[in-house]
Image: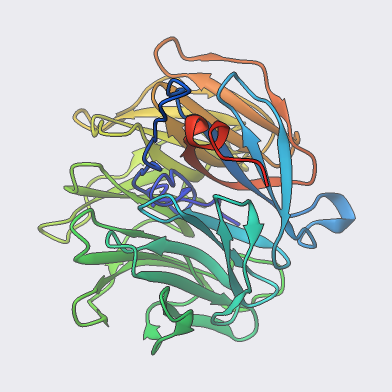
Length: 371
């Protein structure tokens, strides 16, 4: 399956930068009269899908403090096969889709506790949060039969709204910064147990009317999508075509696909920078993968791929560091985007998959009175 997303749709997500793509957000820092403010801690929230014979049976999210290159890790139990994760625009909660449990699980980021799961559609695979933080849009990939819908979930009432019909086997989803349009990757049958053809379209959704617009043809098995920070262009990871397709948000037309190394699984932009797209790729039948490839948006060309780890599944970026979740090697691997050098991997057991980043105000936590 694809890595999470949206643009870090996840991403990881207001602060989601993943297989499904995102925007970033932060919890406001607080100060006290007795303690000076501390810089915010950066926390990577990584879904764990299992490994080996337990692949697909994972049911946890790892919270990894990566401020100093990788620190303390805590675990939060969610539903089975946590496929994607997104963080609310105000940084208060994260939301995890669990493919095998048909749920969306909120996580209170101030306490690190999972809240009661919310019923979603069949086989929820991707999630994106509206810029106003009111609605979570969950793709319903299904199994047999394939899913064909996106389920909006009212985050105030924790209730699902009327589903929106899209293409078959929807995976990644991303929302434009202005909140007007969502884009859904119609991957088709790409997951074990699904039957039917592989997809090759992206379906736009008018979020004012919650109606699907005509699909846009891209490459084979589109899984991850993300929108550039300036809102001008959508990018689609064609996992079976070894390419990334740009789509003009204004014109609604696909541009020339950009070939990349391996099978692209996740996409991310650095916060506020629409010039370079970073593509995390697993191995394919014709290319070695296990890389992160920078793509020049202006030139429409890929740069030299950077070898990172085994089976990259998700990517999220904070400042000048990309964090890559590597399901095959059980690590969270940092990449310095200025030097394109790989840092020391952080071990994360359990099949690290989708990833989202959020900031935590250390000063506020330090000043909290004891109970």
